[in-house]
Figure 1 (cartoon, helix red, strand yellow):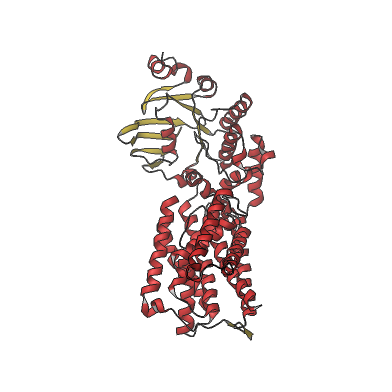
Figure 2 (cartoon, chains in turn yellow, brown):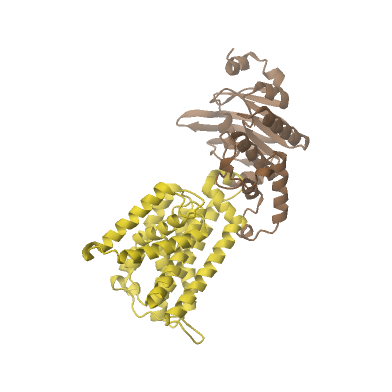
Length: 288
Length: 244
């Protein structure tokens, strides 16, 4: 049972990441490969605040959101002028830069040694050290983020995002300053990823930079593409599928010394097959 | 009264002058035709007026007051200008209705998140889609429409903007006679409402039928201007455009 709860918590965290990235990639058509950076920013903000100050978990989530928004705004101002391959390359660079900061700013992040001893959330008399309670908390955050994402995508703002995805130049002629919209959704998405990071840090009680490298961004991107671009439920399905797949592959019986690499190979093959036979993903409405 | 003017407008592409010191004035409430052979700069002119291309030099004057040396695409609608494209540019993976709704909603991030005039915007969208006969197809994706229907949807999108100046780039190209009638009647109706239409068109019959004045372009320059009947009789126009 503990194992299933553990998987459900991981699923909730990755579902938040998938839903939030889908706003940028699926709805706005911007190929972002930097979600792990904002996930890490949330995680490190929570880890640092909980281990070095008296700030509680919930306040650290809010501060993580603020830091993610501030940084996404800074990089987003530049990125919003780009589209297509250039946008993807720009986000790629940002993830690499943030990872380098996590790894090398040892006074703050403790570098490759990571930050241990991160406390669990505390609220009233609820004990979040109990994994079931933590799962409920993670599901509440997932529900909240899903609700916000749904509100955004159903609003006229969401319609403009889709129009940017379809033809940015054409929608601009109708009076939309598209970089503002791209910047806004990038920052909203980054804030949501930071929430997932805070949950991750507090759940594991230990983080190090390896969880936020470029590979993690591509994994989150795979969740979105596999589940379905421009479909929020698709992103949740994608998270469920890839988390379960990862666990199932543990029992396949690959030789221990190449098991990790073989799992990556299987991921890769599955993604290629999806791109070949169902490019819009399992539930998607749009092809890259 | 001139609602739109260009003064010494210039645009180069790799050293080639696509628009060469073009100075024209468009009368308010009239239908103005822009004609000329392929590559004469008609579409480039529309792209410059709508901010899709940047002006190299010269200026665009709106209402005789606003002098612009740089036209930004997202500001074009605030000058009262909208357009269609020579090659139809719809929001393909969006429904017919959403293709209209997206151009009538609020223009800034915050207000578009908390839209208040949803019913009014739906009413405008229904009105323009009824006009072009696409209301029944409102829930279809734009990508699934026929070529003619796509052209009509693009025109409906401009009508929803309710602006003063309409730039139509070959709106009749590839349309069936029935659809041509719809587009012609829309253009006439705009004139009746004292709106200004700039029409890029190759069909001389339609130009004669619809336009109050025309500008003939050749190699980015203005070759002739005036009422269609008079201009189309000029020897220089016949040689350059009709090749006779």
